[in-house]
Figure 1 (cartoon, rainbow, N blue to C red):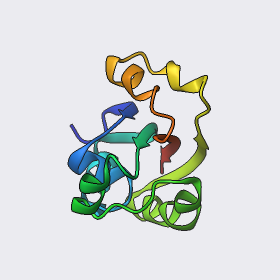
Figure 2: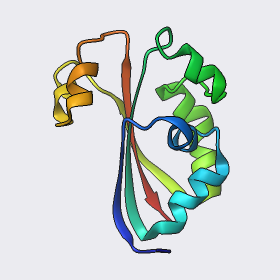
Figure 3: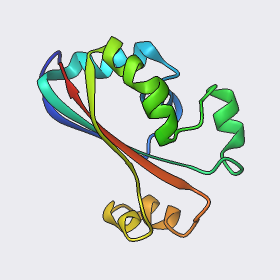
Length: 123
């Protein structure tokens, strides 16, 4: 499966996949890059509530997933894994409904759960 994915969506990850895209698991992120073709796009959407998800955040040793974290830390981590960050943003209330999954609809009601997305290009 090396190099076959043209566009990869990681929507609302949990566990080791969340750790990989949040920068706490470099091996996991490198494995995501391995399956991507040259110049493939990876689109990541993460939604965490610091209080409700505190146990998972601590267990996975996750940093706060925010624009500040992306700018200060993830750019270099993604670059080391073979990705270039091309876009990042925090979703507004209206954007929360864009993910057409039952889980996303349930999450959209919790305003404490910040939804952050990023797009990275394989280099």
